[in-house]
Length: 95
Image (cartoon, rainbow, N blue to C red; front, side):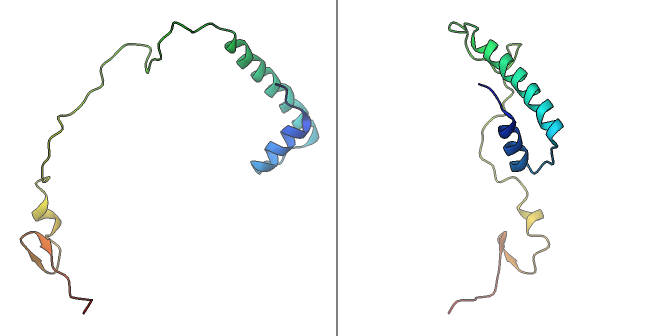
């Protein structure tokens, strides 16, 4: 894949970046060298390599999954003007 001057200008316009002709020419060259490196990476055979999330094998830290009420009900309704059994009381708005 090759990036030409028109593509650089279009991407710059979409990104709302002001790019002069000289800058666009330099960017096209740099983008082409980056894409060339990516094409080199595609040549590597990774058919027997499993995907990994880290370079070092490690176990994710997990907390116990248990259902609780959070022990915060009293704190949550503390500033409410009217409550009953840890529920907010609101005026009736529908007849």
